[in-house]
Length: 115
Length: 113
View 1 (tube, each protein chain N blue to C red):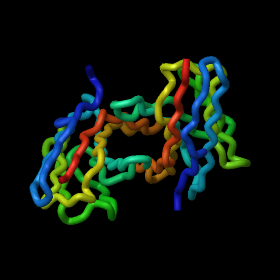
View 2: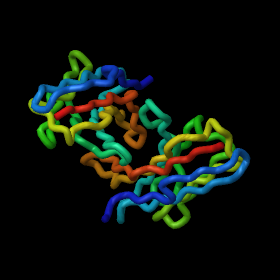
View 3: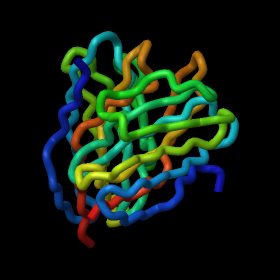
View 4: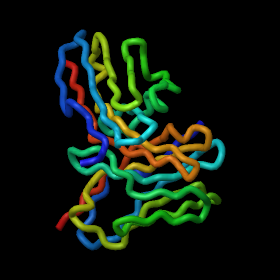
């Protein structure tokens, strides 16, 4: 399978704990994205990387959230001191940006439940 | 700002029925338009896209035409199957910010045998 892969697929954590999600993009894709999706809503943009540089962060990404893509390949999204409002599906996506367009491919998501 | 408005669901159909999901948009600039589909327990998959006015995107029997004059991108399928049961999302991106998709709220479609 050469799609975007995410790990873990499901995580249940107690409020106040830290969690980390990992994303492996499609090989050779230079862009990597994180989105968040809550029940009954469409995904919302959180942040994106071009290679290893984080180029934009949404206002949704509070100080408790940090994303990294250290070598321009896989990425991690860490949430510190989790709150119940963080419960959502965190979607990773990747693309190969080029002049002819930028088609974004999503992974299967990581479900987070904060209890 | 950029936004997408989708027809509210849920939509329930019988097999072989005709499906239409309405999508209208508001955007600064000339957007690219997309339909994504999310099957139960899975992530989003790109279904089809269109990048300029009057373009028709098509895939798996689904079609959508980019209508600039009505700012719409309605999704249609002539004969649905049970396997088409999913949540469908309309989305857009604008030039200069093509990394940022703006999604509609999604429309849940259930097809009964």
